[in-house]
Image (cartoon, rainbow, N blue to C red):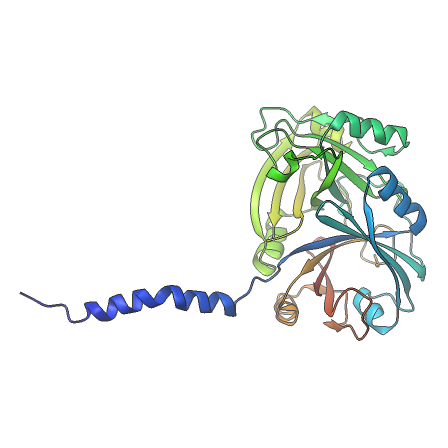
Length: 341
């Protein structure tokens, strides 16, 4: 009978594999831990905080004023003084920024939903009819003609109700209601609330493949859903005639998702302004948290990513919300801040 003298050694190695993998996973933390907040530049902080708190029931978490080298080098706006208000809805956050010094330009009045500077936050509601009525009572500016229920033939999006509107500065926003069986389970536990939280931020992109490479391959987010949306309901929701969209959803371990909107048609959306700065009202930035900021900065630099910040900015103060951070642009020009708290 032939003996296998190597079998005990093999089994010993197999037994060690879980421990080896555990050590390896500890040495290789996730590239980004989650989406911390969506930043929005506003022209009048008091007006904006009133709108988001009174109309949409966000709660103010903090209200600070920042200035100096750290913030200038992070945001790329020299001589800036900025009031930043952090607000919460459910488990999610936005950060409103008013540039007290070095004010920027307004949002182009002819902006369309397929222009590549488009970015919105999708606020989940427990009752679309009641939420829309409340928005009408507060005289919000419509971006959609009315709430739209996406058709049942669309396997991934059928039954979702949505409506686009604008905040006082013209930033697009969305309210959205998931039907049973769609969306995160938490969105189906309203607990008496009308506005529940932020499911995702949506950005218009030119090439889904290039954007997926940036958010998945370079930042480590995961693709969690795909859909192709078209038809009358989608046209009226986006207020774009002939709208035909390829939609790709990505998520990190925590926080809202990022939804890529590629217009298969029409392909006439305008590119992101090449001279856009953080003090322009068209500016939004998605804030991602990471425990390896320097490593990500090196990786993104090697991938020839467009940096707004002058490298990794170390915060020498204790009131600017980050210990180290940097700001880059994705392939279409959308601003992404990578921060360590």
